[in-house]
Length: 347
Image (cartoon, rainbow, N blue to C red; front, side, top):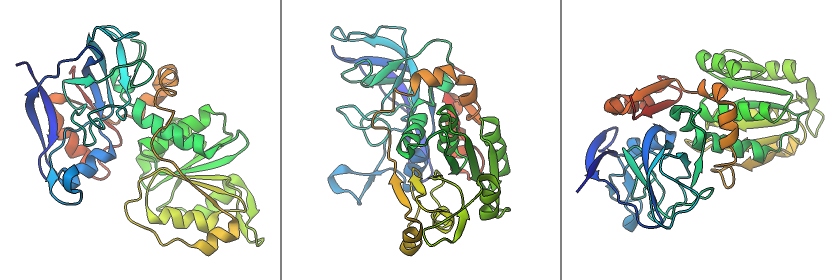
């Protein structure tokens, strides 16, 4: 039996590299050698919990799970019935479309492994190819950038809109990039970590706000002009707010500042509930739009990721070899220690 190394949860705050059976592709499957895989906030959530609730009794016993759902790699085997894909193709993966469950999110397989089985492999459905000019570490950003792209698509931002993104993590910065590539005239990024704000300017944001030290209302008014809510009360002229931070303070800030017919797109996972000021929403007729995953965007972003790879590469703060993968997860678990950690399997 051929084996491979695979990363699994091992109790609260811990991971473990296991030797597991290397999958064998069937006639409709493809086997991908993983070359890079990003670490997501979802992975960190699993580590905080120490695993995932077993399907048979959700909310009860936690079971270990294989991690990783942001992979890039190359095909090393294809089944006899697979068409449009061949050995040697460099690919990114949709982790959601697999009979054995979500890759790295409770399914049978995780992408933080030396090899990943793609069941019912189909070009454009659960795999997409990309040119060999794209580094695997950048290609591993495909999945989170699809999340960011969906938020921007949900915003329906027009070139004349003035937008602020709260949260300069990978999703927030990705949203800022997509907004600028969409032609949006003025994009502001707000965060509490100065280094992240510097990164926001580097990837194309027009301005930044240090919300821990600056008056957000005054800065937005200065940047976007003055407007009003439905009662004529003065408000910044910001058209669209994107919450990529998930902190209750962001929601409160938006409601306080929203002008008449402003829009809030919520893409961050809310870490704990916020008391919603419904009266404030009413006074601005604020539209709240939720953005979850990437219904159509997972491979929509792939060619543009390749075209603008140098800009997207700036999102990666740490590249860590798989031989030191435990350290990679320590970085991801430490608040403020890293922005985007990508694990490389060829270093």
